[in-house]
Image 1 (cartoon, one colour):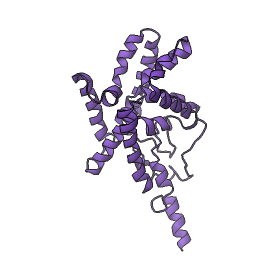
Image 2 (cartoon, rainbow, N blue to C red; image 1 turned 180 degrees about the horizontal axis):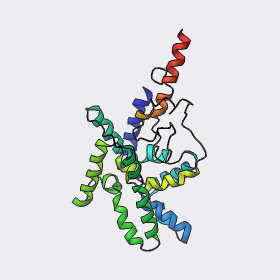
Image 3 (cartoon, rainbow, N blue to C red; image 1 turned 180 degrees about the vertical axis):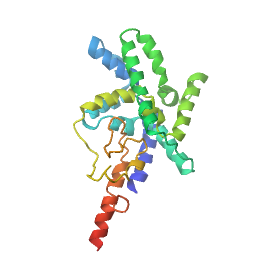
Image 4 (cartoon, rainbow, N blue to C red; image 1 turned 60 degrees about the vertical axis):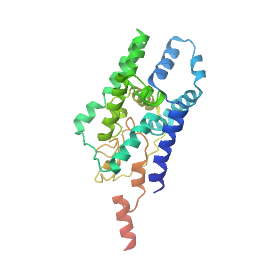
Length: 255
């Protein structure tokens, strides 16, 4: 119950305060600039003028070593928060999520890595073109400029948000090059903070439907490249009324 109440309010704070008020929306250009700085040198002085982005960016980069992409993508991204809040609202009024076939889902998730590869490659060939292509991100439209933009980027942002009505966090899962970058960096993570049992995946699959982004595999393993750390699976993990292994233990103890 605490998680059910706390998470939406926290996401609302991230969206309104971090995003719309302070403009602390990290985007893929920030990541590309850091890559360029590491490879070619130069100055990162421009980031000093965006203290919110500096703080969130540093925290996010450090966090990937410990928790992968989960902290930023699941808890600190204002646009991600907007998508999840819309999804929660639409589920509440009865709009059901579309179930994407497993094989199709697998290939759709690769698109964001293709975008990341293209942007990183162009970074050292034509920075201006890379910056233009980064407009695939709707972050500036929805967060930085509060939807006060020309028709084309506005329409793109609305299409993405509409996709999120039927497939939760569709942009994060399939298209986001920044999320792909954090997923790649997340390969370095040191901590596996999500608890699992031997029964998870074999035979129990009760947690699988609870994951809003489909990050739990049929084997029961969690694909941390796709996990946003929402903790829905952990709520199930500790619930002795819903988690089948815990239900079995509870029933045996009552006997």
